[in-house]
Image (cartoon, one colour):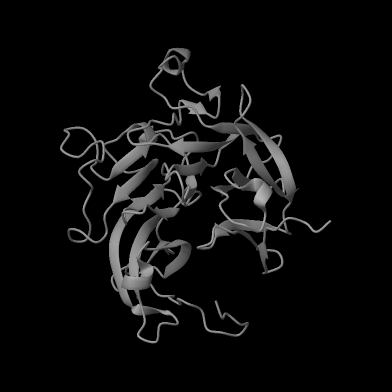
Length: 321
């Protein structure tokens, strides 16, 4: 509220923390996603994921930091940064880094499979690393964080304690339905399919054995019934740049309340997911603004689309008749 063009950014950080650069390389930091703590009004905490690359090194560091609201209450303090989690990603073609927080203040982080054609090292199926997974951590417990005891691999011999679900290629668009608390997320495909997933604890979502409904490995591997199927998938003939989505809980477009709305930047379309029939289907809502690159919601549940092409932010409303 109260934003006017020309105001300073809420958070402006440009340089990686000291020690990120190598002897001959130049560090570059790119913000990926941000999420406010559910008790932000009281604690003023914000979490931001970013990709840190070094000019003379391959891959990048996927990093998540905590920032605090400044004393004036109008911005976040860059000087307050606390690095809470990071991991090295071998290849730079997929960044993921989506963030979401549940009502209890647990932070969910989408981590890509590390790159390479069809996950050649099968890292997404290996719970001994953090690649190709959605993590859940408590950033306000432990130092720098605590893995909740209800995470599926806490106290187990096999599996990293941070992992909440795994078997993803490039998990993006993490979001919670504010009424049901269901975690949704999309998985950007490599060659054939884009996915919408309902993400649950300990779920194995199949990559790279499956991409969407297509078996990518030996047939006997695809007979395993432990893989979670996507809530919906569509082929690259229909779109190849899924942006994420939200269960709509706003009031500006009442006909969509309770429906999952998701978008594809390549197709330039906003769709709604219909789960009422024998098979889930998608239905066109509207064309997206020019070069739409991300969706988001506000505290009232209203849906926005940001356009990379125009530099504008658009609000979804029901058209006037």
